[in-house]
Length: 148
Image (cartoon, rainbow, N blue to C red; front, side):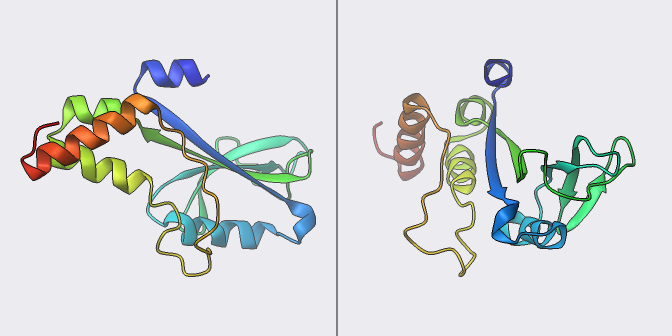
């Protein structure tokens, strides 16, 4: 799947939380508000039929449910899972100007950065290639009027 996404200039960012930590459906939906309230997230848990199911959540609410069976608990492995799709830096650099590409790249690295409950030493997994980092540096240099 990652190759298919990459061939279209897309990336996936996934996080999973164990339900054993006392996380409920309500608390997980609230988390969608604190992580990024304006970005839809693929949210997975167990449906009312008892099988793993994915819906789209945003701003603390389920906004799309393909089957209408809802989410009633964590997935059968005991975890809640969220996934975000994002446009990769290479796509941005090809389709926007340097400042826009830089803004988009930096924006994708700001997961939770405005949430005061996330400590500074919290490790955020970032799916970015060395080529994308080099393009980001080139975008910064270009935006500043410097040679890349």
